[in-house]
Every structure is written in structure tokens, then in C-alpha cells.
Picture 1 (cartoon, helix red, strand yellow):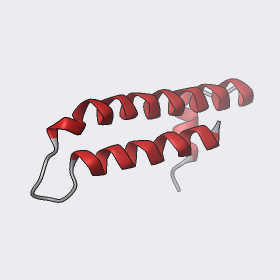
Picture 2 (tube, rainbow, N blue to C red):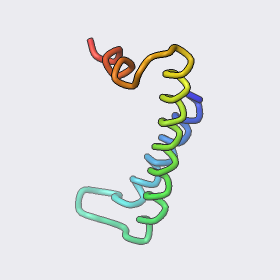
Picture 3 (cartoon, rainbow, N blue to C red):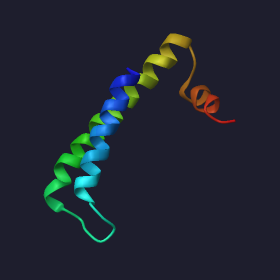
Picture 4 (cartoon, helix red, strand yellow):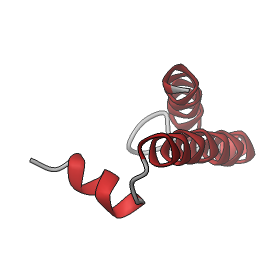
Length: 69
């Protein structure tokens, strides 16, 4: 699941770079691909969060607090 999140993040990063290749340009032809990549990345993250919470019997709030120092 972690590998799936990382793969989805790489794809989203590539699609974002195609959408916004530099700070002065927006490539509207890449917008749909970027949106789809973002949705897939969000879904992969949700699956991982759900798995962690279910496996360890913790809430999303408890999981979030673990990420903070």
C-alpha cells in the first residue's frame, strides 16, 4: 500500500509538472490528467489510512497525532 501511494504521488507529480511547467505557464491541455492523478493519489492515501486505522484499532485523529512531534 505504501508503494501504491508513492507510485500515485510520482504520477501526480509528473502530471502537475505537465500542467504547470514553470511559474509563468499553465498548460490547460494537461488539466484533466492532473485532476485524475490527484484523485487516484487521494484514493491510495485513503486506502492506506483506512488500513492502518483498522489494523491498529486507532482513529484518524490518533493517527494524525502520531505524525506530529
